[in-house]
Length: 289
Image (tube, helix red, strand yellow):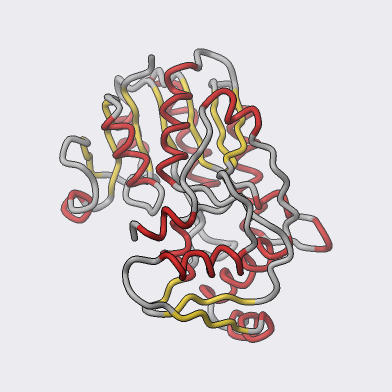
């Protein structure tokens, strides 16, 4: 079993629960962080942190020494623009040969399922181009890889939909999504590291129930343990208007459009068979928030 893990993105919304679960399962984690003091407040004390930057070759080499696996929890930030340096593009281009030279035996990459909406009904977003390019780079590089394609994480309800006492929605949610809890996803990551050897694997990550965004937010509101919440719905045209001069709003508009219109199908049969079936529902998730 690959025990020593180099981790990039440990302080993110999905990095923290996965890192904690890996640590609790007995894996030895070393994470690259820009600010040691800030990161230490967010992750378990037993996780080794080293200061550094994804843009710096020397920092990456120090991270990779003696590690078996590289776990990548990367994303395009809401403030980024097409001409910027992107961790999921230039960052991956830089780290792949360094990881191979250091003896890393497997790349584990958290990707996205909704990126497959790119090119459907005229939808085209540069962020999805980057995500698709990242997958292509990893698959073609030559190191054994595990790529996870998750449906919508339940944690995004707290991080993106919830604003104080309000849950913000926009547009018509036409299709159901198999919302997944990070805790269930982390269990699948752990199982994959225990059973995979040198083979390349791709897994669709989906939760136990299918709900559209409106249904999911309503279910969360009914079962939220932290007090009363209120649902607000903004016209997508308004979000798009503000997005014309506010980068974060433009990012949000495109995410909403993709999620509302992507015809997600259940494709996690093989994932459940090999890595275990998720059990956490939005009701259970909300009751513990």
